[in-house]
Image (cartoon, one colour):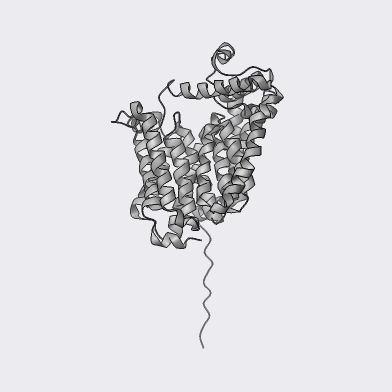
Length: 401
């Protein structure tokens, strides 16, 4: 007679419990929110929320009927940096600008954090685990940019939501978000390229939606600015944008060592954009393939940061979330190579971890960043995405659902 042997149940290891905890969206939302709240509170109590002060001052000037650019700004800024966003931003930022001084910056960062989290966790097709890992991969850069009270978090979230709306067939809201993001920060207008990845029969709808929405947005500043002064107001905004790129050294491909690409910046920007558009159109027959649309999105959010006039290190949180979407799509169908896996972890260490001085000594970070190794890695990442989207889509990816 056989004797039953009971196999004892093994208790999960500490690491397994940590992984299980971090793969729960509720847990990481709460944990991330607490971290963002504490970091924001520390910066506010130390009076180190300069970008928020810039946004608040510009918004107050707007509601006083004064354009916050050029000589007006120079006279009022009081050692603050430049304000570069459109008048629509001042309308949207008003609740934060006119809140109590201690409350406004807290609400701004918390709202941006919630928007970023919601944009990631409402993405279609990706699993909960993939979304959690994407959020965690970008969180350190997210925290860094929120330490600076930047608008980049909201812009990145809007890019994700534009993709989300298009995938769900909600083209009206996609167009609204494109126009809101574009009329606040010029990056947003590049999302128009995503529209080419969807059926052409939708184009008349895009145009029909865009005309009245754009008119409303363009005229919205009339809440404070006389209509007769609106053209000059917008002209001052454009002038501020074009002059800002020459005020310092930025973290874009034009500063990659050992090259000196700055004299050719505009030609490279236009040339690469034309090449990407040609690649988009030449592969338009793949537009019914979900992987192709993900790849096109990742290419787009890479381009707008890498080839921008004035990107900073933490701005790459926008590019990295597109990269994560591409990576999971490739991984899901087994198209990830050894090169991709190695690059994944090197990117995480150099681009996400190194800028955080409590995790990496600043001298080590400067060693890498002064040599622009971070830019070379990001360029390798983006080139790989372009190749697998426009030049040669891996055959398994065509079956990605």
